[in-house]
Amino acid sequence: MSAEWSLAMVFVFAITLASGWRRSKIRRAVRNLSTVSQRALGEAPDYAPPKDPQTDELAVYAGLHRRTGWIVKGVWALGLVWMGYVLWLVAGVA
Image (tube, rainbow, N blue to C red; front, side, top):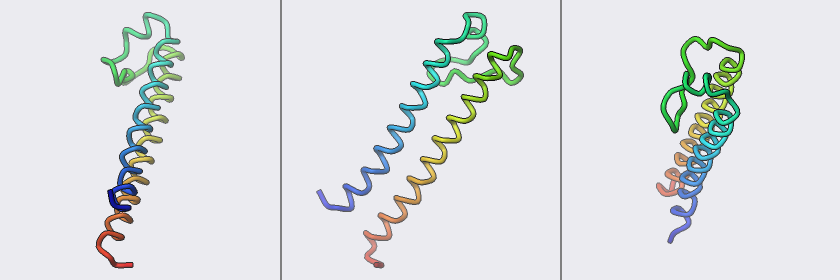
């Protein structure tokens, strides 16, 4: 395996770990909600919050859902920049 493939795998690992981290964080938060609040959420594994949270508990959950989504999107952005760098190395521009 070439060094470029190893560098490209960093992208795959980062995306996989970030997505798994988000799912576990959301799953843990859903487990801590009351049954009534759990029924207001979307289907697993995303557990999307309702558009207008009726309780403070759901509002806190919606904030967590939004923040973890932004973190995963940030990891995707960094991963794409990393893949651009790897492609730049493969092209032999350096």
